[in-house]
Image (cartoon, rainbow, N blue to C red; front, side, top):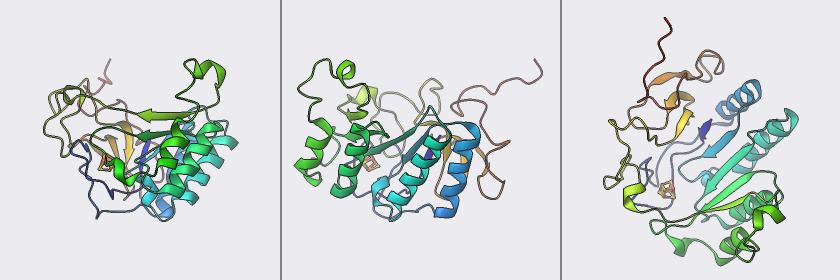
Length: 228
Ligand code: SF4
């Protein structure tokens, strides 16, 4: 499940499939706690996302709540965070937690991101030892650091403010912006993160995700026929 803790971002990537800007909405701790409860109940992994998640003033608290729940429930999906790396202290924390195998964390480093906003220590924290070891995964199986690198425009999804992507969009059911369940800062739960996705309910008002868990990965896929 994707938990969008903020829609704010300090970068302006042209390919941003959520069309994030400097102003936006942050998730409250109350809503986030409900998401964690769902994570435990459903034995689901959680991607803490945005916008840029490290801009949220409660980022560390949310991260620790999710990690704690994941460990206590022996959750196999774990906790995943993708960062643009601009908030140095928090990006370094993520790199260290991922190096120790506590979370999976990826640093976005492609031509659309503003690399001038990322301190060289952050890049080093995500890449050290990864660069020098061709058989890194075998030697360090508990190192969950990743780098998200360049994609060509034909591989990008035509979503959000990316109007030059070569795939996705309402007529392409095979490619999803972000497979769901997708939970917005308000607690609204969608089938997936695509523009135009189907709203299922609200994680707080509807008492968690029981009954709201989507029966497909993307709203563009055919609804299963329950008469079968
Ligand atoms: S860093 Fe991510 S969230 Fe921010 S504008 Fe770029 S793609 Fe969008």
